[in-house]
Length: 97
Image 1: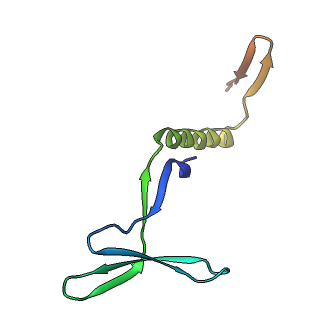
Image 2: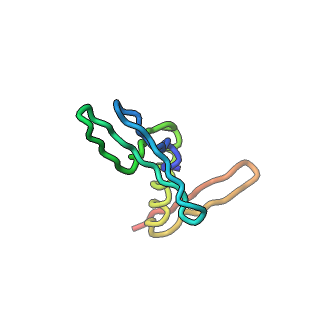
Image 3: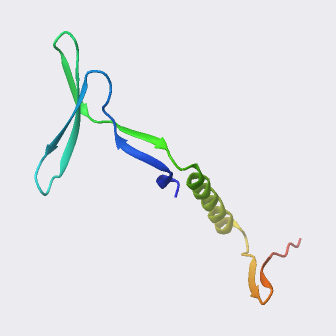
């Protein structure tokens, strides 16, 4: 869930930058390149960087909570008792020394 909380996209929208997509065929897929042109006739081409932005903060915190809950259950010495009754459900843990 934490990975799905973000939007991922190829970003190439700076001044003097142009995006190029090259198709390498069926087995090799496509590649995205970003070319920056400078005023003195120079150019620089590289793979298009990925822009990552937080889009869904609720999913981020839910994923972090699920990871935390999983760690608690995995590291707990003895699992708590979980019972379902007519009136509802109950989680019970007994501590002793």
